[in-house]
Image (tube, rainbow, N blue to C red; front, side, top):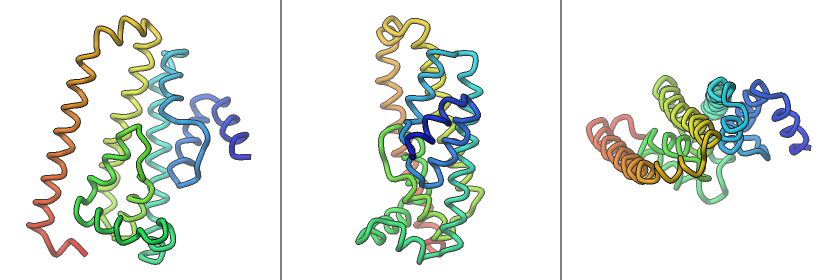
Length: 199
């Protein structure tokens, strides 16, 4: 059933991607990978790539917002029942230690990471919505527009592009690691300066 719904949304085109991103971000698993889908659109239909990426961002932000407010309304009970049994305290500790960095990293990285669990933590622990929104928006813009751009370039000349930009990818990965490390450091210092905001 989920597979059929996913296939239908993909077939609809860019507006289907909007719904797919929304459904995926609310916590309902979908069979199509958004990342592969955006790269594929860039390869096969470059003129629609950035529009599709924008709709994916909008859908993801809307879906994460729904999950954020649902967990805020349910409070700690929602946190306890949503997370993996035996792990709620661990995710709560991570969120209390690193704050919205725990949301930014999995929202940005295309590798499987427990974004939804940290979105639930952010809502249940009453994080401000505006900072949460800005973090999700920044991460999704970088990720989805980056994938659309990559798809366009791969569609033009994949072999030559990858060969000529291999060092760019290496340096970009190092730069991303440094950036994320600095975010963790800043988050740690913020928590020390404002201990009253840590529950």
